[in-house]
Length: 267
Picture 1: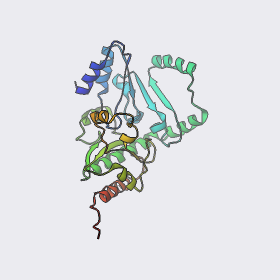
Picture 2: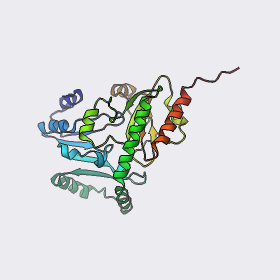
Picture 3: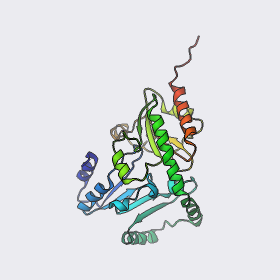
Picture 4: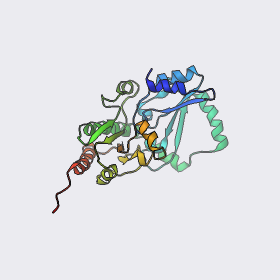
């Protein structure tokens, strides 16, 4: 059993009621064996719940691997246009009926406008996600060959430690990736050097976005904890959109090449 799953099982206590995880993970794009996680949960009489936002229902179906419930942030890929806020829980009819009673009691019903926007977006979900996956693979391959990039985290790369697992349980590898800048390149300066790709903490839309996890999604963690998790100060996360991949690569490479140049001589 992989070390991370062994640690998962070791962390289960008598008071534990469910196993909640994500795969691929944010922002390192680690991939967990869904069947193994489901087996651990069943062995301890627990529900298994996955945040499937990064993979989407197009690329990964955790219920087929024994997971009990799947959570999606509909604000991201399901909506896909950065113009609605919603979420979804998917599971067996029996489990959903139990959850539905809580939803009816506590509220949380989606308004008509967001329902209409979501229905619009679902019509193009498959097309968008597959194009985003193609773009992410092309961008990851280009970054992996750049001298200013120390590491690329993308399960579609053969050197990714869980590439085989991802290939087995996903139809494609998704539109998310992250990379570590090499040397002393300042990530903030790099982000500002981009001309086409804006910096924002959201993801899953038709537009490509970049962010710095150490200052955004994981800013609440202590530096030592981020380091333990492998989230460096020089890490950049990329949510690939549906633009032309060559344009995205050109913008990223131009920014990297500009920052890698030695400063002009003075005097």
